[in-house]
Amino acid sequence: QSVLTQPPSASGTPGQRVTISCSGSSSNIRSNYVYWYQQLPGTAPKLLIYSNNQRPSGVPDRFSGSRSGTSASLAISGLRSEDEADYYCAAWDDSLTGYVFGAGTKVSVL
Amino acid sequence: EVQLVESGGGVVQPGGSLRLSCAASGFTFDDYGMHWVRQAPGKGLEWVSLITGDGGITYYADSVKGRFIISRDNNKNSLYLQMNSLRTEDTAFYYCAKDNIVAAPAYDIGVGFWGQGTPVTVSS
Image (cartoon, rainbow over all chains, first blue to last red; front, top):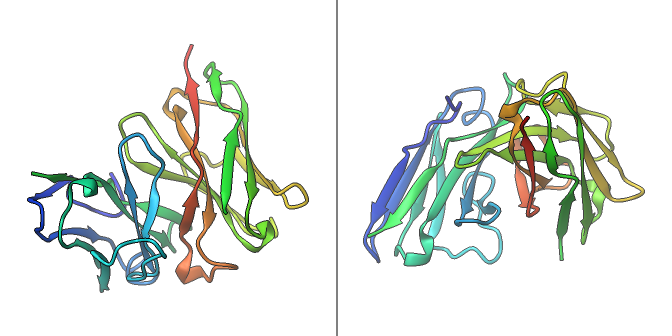
C-alpha cells in the first residue's frame, strides 16, 4: 500500500480537462514539495511538475500542479491522445526519511 | 545534455549479489544528490536509495535497508548500487536518477532526471 494515494485510473475525451488527485499526510505533502511524473508505455519516467506547481522547460502549459494541505493534484487540460500514460505523484517523507511515490494513475483518452 | 547510463543488471539467484553502475554526464555530478528507483514488472515506481552530492549521507527504503549499499565516485562521475542477499521481490527495472535541484533543501528533494534503467531478475 502506497504512502501517497492516487486513483488507479482517469479518462477523458480529447480536449477535456482531467484531474488526478494525490493524498498524503503532514509528513510528506504538507511539509515538502510535490513532484509529478509521466511514464509513457515502455519508457522511463519523465519529470512533469516539480516544487508543487513548476513546469520544466519543454512541458506544455496544459499540465499544471497544485497543493493544498495534505493533498495535491495534477490537471491536464486540452487532453490529447499522446497524454495516454501513467502518472505518479511523489514527495519526500520526513517520518520515513525517504522519497515516496503514489501507486500511479493510468490516464486513458477515449 | 544530461545523460545517465545504467549497467550491471542481469539474472542472479536468490541470496546472490549484483552491483549496478550509473555513468553520468552533462552536469556537475557532485552538485547533485543521486537516487536509485526501481519498478517491478507491471507495477509502480518504488524509491530505493538516495546519496547526497558529497556522498556523506545516504538514505534507504526499509525494503532494502541492510542489504543494499549506495555509493558514488565523484572523480569518475559514477553512481553505484551494491545489492546483496537478493530476493525474488527485488526483481525490477532499476533506474539511476538525478536530484532536480543543486544541493536540494530537505523540503524540495525530488527526482529531476531518469536514466533508461537496467533490468534485474532474481530467480532460481
